[in-house]
Image 1 (cartoon, one colour):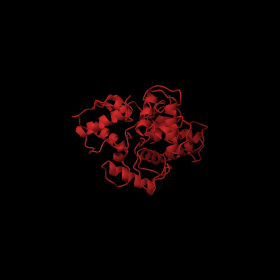
Image 2 (image 1 turned 90 degrees about the vertical axis):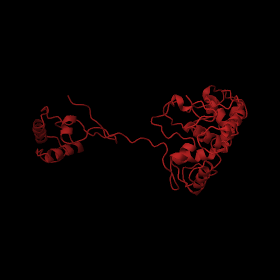
Image 3 (image 1 turned 135 degrees about the vertical axis):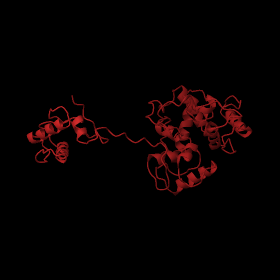
Image 4 (image 1 turned 120 degrees about the horizontal axis):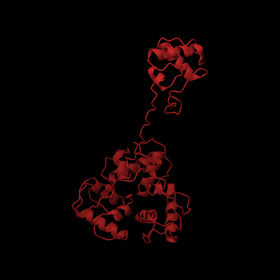
Length: 321
């Protein structure tokens, strides 16, 4: 029995099933392979006729294959053809960008820089001098090398997750409008509040006050002011709508004074971009970090305990579930 055809990375058949009467480029390839192996298929004309079939039978016999004159994966493989579809390269969620770069990744970069107050130009996907100045300014504020090149460290400091392997869940960036309720609205209100556009309660209810905040934010970013939160508005708010899988349980670990490590680095970076933390991003949760957490919690109407749990992480824009 012969397996189904296997395609290459371009969707073309890599090892098509061929038999008497077949024609085209694949037959020509077969005839060339047979001739190279010392089996005469007749004229290399792309037509699978009796001479080609005879050559196939003789080749199959020489290799101990079923002599049916039909060219399937086993015969192709014996002829030296790799019938396995190559694995597509992984998607680079944090590509290295520099002056001269263009495309969607630059759009994302400009949006993130704009929400943090470092970029004032158009979100046009063109990494020009204005974008470079914004990058250098942001890098300086985060204690990074000010080279104007956006690599993993700069992406991470901007809040991007550089380890995203699979397509996003459908509802990762749900469309929200007046009347919507639930956790996604809580997240939206928290993001708008952190940027100074929302002054109401973070209650998960998309009412007139939330809509006014959305419209004002959209206007500040040059988006259509329709009060509807779709992918463009989410993206400019700093949300990656292509986050594939739920984060691990420790994506939002509970932190308090005395904690150390990468999660504290992330916390300090997020607090710093929002203007609450002025110390070093050193991964050590000391008194200065605690004071910044308390100030942020007060600003967001959260319990002021200096402990960073899911509510504080969520208000900082982190997707915890």
